[in-house]
Image 1 (cartoon, rainbow, N blue to C red):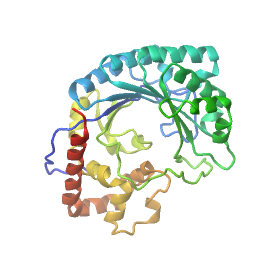
Image 2: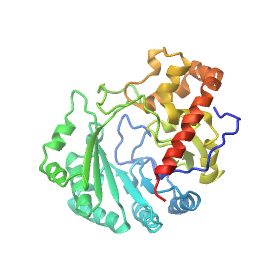
Image 3: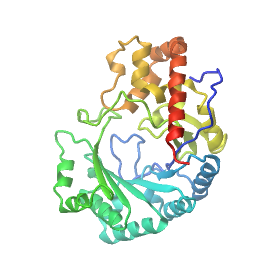
Image 4: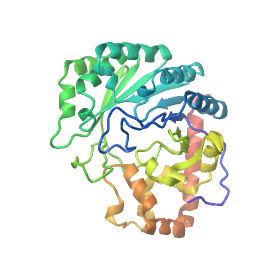
Length: 345
């Protein structure tokens, strides 16, 4: 839903480059947002990953971090360590998101953690929960996190919200290894219960997380630039980004990172989502009384998918966006100005 009107803003750029080198994973969680499983083979080559990092660093002075996720990014082995090293040598912070499968063997856990640290990794996020635990044990997760933190890597543990028949979070917090990690303080280790959302009907309802804020503005857009295993460039790394064609803004083989990012800054729909969030847009175009099925209480990304996939809502956005355009653009430009003022030189 790009608007042809020229939007005049000062040049901006992403703070984070997210590399999804593969959607292959050691797990096959039934509610995985990417449908990851061990049989997927398509992935980015080392050359494509490194070139993406160097290109983003060269084109965006705003870039501060490179995140490697997936799928399971540790499965690409030496290519991950080399990619982290390249980003580190460019002065960029690095983070990986993993399920911690490599913690199943204490020897492999220690070796992997050491190699991650030697490559320059600054932060590790390990995700677990009811679905993950069917494939990766809590023991493996805690081994991997303990070894990574012992190497001086900041650890962040994310536990998906439990269903009525699961108590993964309680199992983790009762383990002495978790207590030892937590005792290190928030400068070295943190944890959270993450919002969960369904991707098919084969699920057990888990209610909503206390931390859920589905009606918030979207901070992902414009601050993150994502490269997928298919060499596509995405505007965000939200849970539903592969389910929303409009979030695909380019390809490494066609327009490239810089042109893809620049083009999206002229897309009023993305600016509006960034300012008001998908929930806010739906409520405005329906005059404050949207059909309840359009608003998700679980996750902002779920509402964003509903916003893009509902024909009636898309029609209303096209009919009414000009009513909201001046106010949205004013707040967007003010936000950009304040962000630039607050950023260190």
